[in-house]
Image (tube, rainbow, N blue to C red; front, side, top):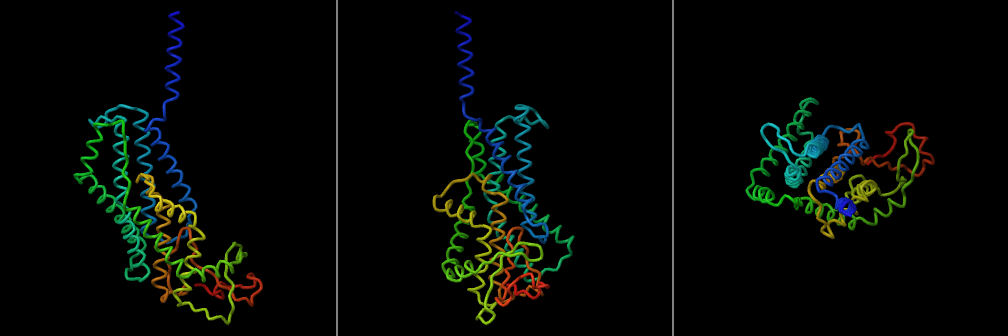
Length: 338
């Protein structure tokens, strides 16, 4: 009878163990692992012939920080309780490190956005003439400076320090910072896209209806046939804006819809998830389109080196209707590019 009751007790204990929810630390590990796989997939899908710019270097640094966080979580989960350099590490530090990273990521949106915008404006205007090696070093140290500055602000802010200190008393709960910067940045971009689309929705509809898919130089491309006697002008900002919208939405429409849902429903996403490489490339494409539009009167693809987008091809081909087959064009220069 005693043996049977002990067996029942052990069985009930095992049943309770299996019915327990997934540990928070294990869940964090799986989330960061999924984010790293998304980083690798996004970096692998980008165009490899893009020029050097600040956003490329920052995306690589973000992937490195995510990997570093995953390694720290894995080590602590494996050893559970150990001492390194006279510092005792426990499962509590998994929550602490992730919270610090969340605060850091949350305060990075505005600096990264403004720095990337300044970088594209300077590159487009050609006001800075640095060699390739100097440019790489400049981007590298700029990225390091931004990371150190934001991390120093997070660790030195009294409010954040008190929040992290209070967390020590309630280690079972691990709340994460939700960035207000990312919300307002998403709101800002969604509103600009909405206003731009409403402004030239007729031109956008006309372009979408005129899209043709064909093969050119062994590549599948989209092109827009137009009448050679039309009143088309390159410097018309409204027409040029419609082309930018078509190019942008052809790549980022699902992401734009996701941002609309997040903004309307005010979805709270932890900052360590929200700051990711697909989001940064989305912002990157938005900035490139903005710089193109504000400098449309300067655009001349034969003379100027335009910033290249890792995901969006901003070179839209507009072919005269008198050419029945695109393969008849032997030289790309004969194509009117806007």
